[in-house]
Image (cartoon, rainbow, N blue to C red; front, side):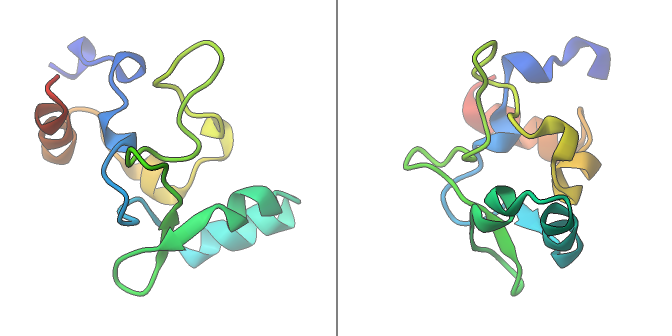
Length: 103
């Protein structure tokens, strides 16, 4: 079933709401700063569990969502955070986000 799911036609996991749900572990912030990517490390908002999350737009989408080629692609994909890297296509959470988004 996961072969049928195409993240580049969905992006539901990147549109989880404006409450800092896409968490960023401190190690990611350190990694981005060491790389000279303070722009990524600064694009955060308060998240759950005392962590920060990726900043979101008014519509609840991640500020890094959308490229000139795809509205559902990530602009920082190669540098994305641990939470995004660990998110599994086809997982129960993926399917829940897709269902909530009407996919």
